[in-house]
Structure formats: C-alpha cells, structure tokens
Image (cartoon, rainbow, N blue to C red; front, side):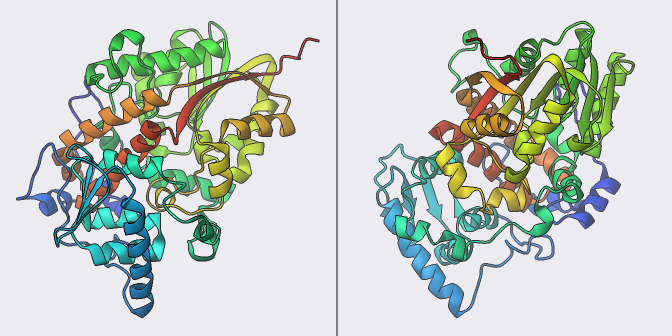
Length: 470
C-alpha cells in the first residue's frame, strides 16, 4: 500500500482480505454491502444514517432489542432510572410524544429518542453496553454525539443510585474467558481491532499514521478549534518528546512495545538508533515494514510479530505509546517486569498511557463494557497511582516525570471524528456497513467525551532506576 504525503489517496479496497476478515469476526467488513446499505440516504458531513436493516449474523447484539417478560420489566425499570437521571442533567432528551427531559437550554446537546422502548430494553438488559448498541441500531440520534456523551461522562458517578451501583456485579456481564489477555488470547484480541483494515485507518489518520494522542504546540491556537493541517506535525512532536525523554540518539538500542504503523521507529532510526519493535497486528507489521523499507532503514529497524513477554536482549531505552491499555489489569506487573528485565543499566523508559481516576479504575476493573465488546477486547485503563504502585512493588523502575495532555487527546479525537465523517463513502466502499460506521463514530465520540469531561487523561511517563539521593 502506498499513500501520498497528505494521506488524501487511500489504496484500492482489499476485497478478498475483507471477506476473510468478515468471516473471522462479526464487526469486520462485508464486501459490497456497506455502500449499498447507505445508498440513497448519504449525508457527507453528518452522522451516518440509521441502518435500514441489520444482519443478525454479523450484529447479533444489535439486530433486535431484548424481548420477553423479563426484558420488559428490566426495560421499564431502566427507563425510570434513565429519566430520573437525565432530568437533572444539562442536556435535552426529546421523545416522540413531544416530552423533553433535562435542564439544558437551547444550545445544550440534544438526544433524540427514536424508539424509546427498544432503547430502554437494551439498557435494562446490558447497561452502558445497551447505550452503545441502541445508537448503533438507530434507537436514538444526536447531531452532537460527543456533547451528549460528555454530559453522561461528567455525571457517571451520579447516574445510578449508590445502592444499585453496589449490585452491578450481580447483573452486568463479565469478561469472557477468551478475551482475557493471557498469551494465547492476546493475538486475537489485538487482531480484532488493529487488523480491521489498514485502508480503514488511513481514511481518518494523518500522514504519520499515528493512532494516539498528538501534542500540539502553543502557537497552534485553541485546542478546541485547532485544524487538521496541524495534526501530523503535532504527532511528530509527541513522538520526539518521548524519544528525547528516553535519551534516544545515535547508537541507542531501542525497544518499542507496540509498533503502530511505524512512525516512531522511523523517527528513532533517523536519529541513528537501532530499533526492535514488537506488535501483534499483522496488518500493522506489513505496512510498518513497507514504510521502513521505503525510508531506507531496513538495516536499523526490525518489526517482529511477537508478544512483549517474549522479548529478549538488552536495550538502552524502551518506549511504548498507548499500548499498556491493551495489557489488562492482571498483567500490568509482567508488562513492567519485562521492561525492567530488558532495560540496560542507566537506561530510560518513556511510555504514553491513557489513564482514569484511581477510584473509578478500582470500581470498574472487573467490568465488561461496550468498548470491550466492540472495540478493544481485553483492554483496561490504568491510573497514575496504579502505574506508580505496580512499578514500586514489582520492579526496580520508578516514575520520575509525567505530563498530562488530556486536552490534546480531545482535539486529536475531534479531528479523527471529522475526518471519519468526511470519508464515510470511502469507508463504506471498503465494505464497512452503516452499523459499523455508527459503532466507530460512537467509539470516537465516547473517547472524546471522556477527555473533554476530565474523566480520562493521557500521560507521558518517564521511568528509570535512578536511586534516591539522601
């Protein structure tokens, strides 16, 4: 696959590969269906239209809402809880009968109920998983989806009464055994997201193919309105800061855990470093190797299809960008122990990690969420306190410096969201149907809402073994 410098030209659709992927996983593209399903209702800049029909084999959790006496009772109860919660929130929830709930004024984000009973049945059965599935199905709409989700994210601790929150483990689904990040599962978990299609990602990422928060310069202007043209350079700035903090330069032996599509390895090689980069995504490996070869750095960069736990050797620096989120709560000790094991004396570590408040992390560490089911199986976000605690208890590494940049991630996600919507037709031509496009939009907006509300942050964290001077 080749791309122009401004990433305007996507490669031709990989029809055969898309078919194979669709057979492996229900959320993968089905050739020739995406564009046809969206035909006639195209909106090049707005939310993808509700699906006219939903393939139950591909989308078993979306095609039909729960039904039966138990679902009806749960739906009624969930509807009462939802209405009681939104009455106090700064948004507007509009119902087909003309009722409007919420304290929001004319400029507040609006959630439009299309099929209230289906919505209530889904959240009654599956909680927040049902919230996402009901949007995928078209049970509710929002022109400012991130705005609606931001209101919910800012009020997450108050949406459900405290006594019921304590009972969540009794009725919410638990993580399937096959999605836990044991070594035998990790490859399939990673593949379900990162092996969807390089063409899909190239349609909304910038020329660097960086799929993590950028770091915008102060002169880029307000982050709420920073433009697409600033994104690629901001991604390079993010990478350069991490490389600087890890001390990467001429002759550095660098381990990268999580290759992405190769931009960090390319920039490290340009500094004169020798890079060993590991990934579990065959799609990412292929494109990263292609980019590395085109840049003439094949002799300096190795991209291995390998679990981080299997890495051997000694490295002067270790860098990992937003990969710890895919490790899983119970595997954080071995992640940092692996880094500690391969880090040479005097070496430095720089990681970029999405984080959540420690209390929320503890409360949700056993939860199975919409993001797990549809986007990142096996993933979980750490807190800063957890990173500090795990490294102190299980390694000789210590956190020496960190920088929060959550507002920069909100801006990055907004730009991805805008680009994704602009490229809706191209995405459909790759075989990704209306349900997938609504799912992906919900994911981008759900994430942006987390950063805009302050519920999530992203940190650049520097670690080393420097002893405390008394």
